[in-house]
Image 1 (tube, rainbow, N blue to C red):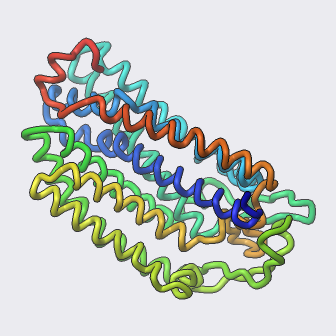
Image 2 (image 1 turned 135 degrees about the vertical axis):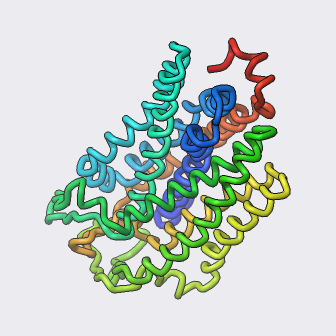
Image 3 (image 1 turned 180 degrees about the horizontal axis):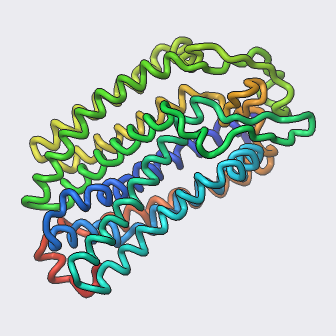
Length: 377
């Protein structure tokens, strides 16, 4: 069996994998939901769009629940600090996620145009809000969360909800929104035909170009932020607490991992390559591979942020030494072994289910939705 250090690293990789998988898969639904009021010019087109996401929206939430539960088990300190203190942000996220299924079910109860448009915008809000909040969350991790720990590991949070809305965090929210929309255009172009497909490709071209610019600005912004440098870490393979290490903040330190291992620069570089490839493949209507490239764009963007943060899981903006890392914030050795066994069983099961769910429907068009109307939303 693996040693404690290796298990900690595997657990960190597993959480990163689940987060990337959730965002890629849920970006299908959120991206299409955001595009709904703008690309669906007529009710027939909106009916097609809705029935792409409404059929399997619940399956994407499995990965969200899995990610949160995994964080709770692997890094209980992170869960204890972050979730209670970020209660309002979590509540807004939960309400937004619940708004979509409510809109799917109530939209068809009354056939008036005003009623349907009202719920269409409900789907938009239920898709755009989580997209932005995910980006804000990543932005705040790079800024650091305002908390400190006392000698008994009791956390004191010294911020509030509005302090989370830092300009950099909001900017990350905009980037997250843009990447989700790009993913939405890719899957909609792949699953639709005719005019709706052309609308999706045109929207993808605009968003893709904007993302190339926005991501470049974000890169320069990160260079100006204060990162955290670990000065003394007692060890990686034994039992330790956050109080055992020393650390300090330094401007530009978030790029230290890239400086120490230059080959890692290929990850952010691939983000640009994947965006350009997505736009090219959409333009020649190779929509299946455009969707793959769009998914890779999200994966490399998140990987870029994860590499920046490594080994930090929850940085502190007040006292850098109190920042939680994957080495000093993890649970016991035997719990990590149990999690590894469970992950080997259930993660393939979840992805098999998800693949089956997304593969049920062929190309969506007016004829398909009309023929199968009784089985659709």
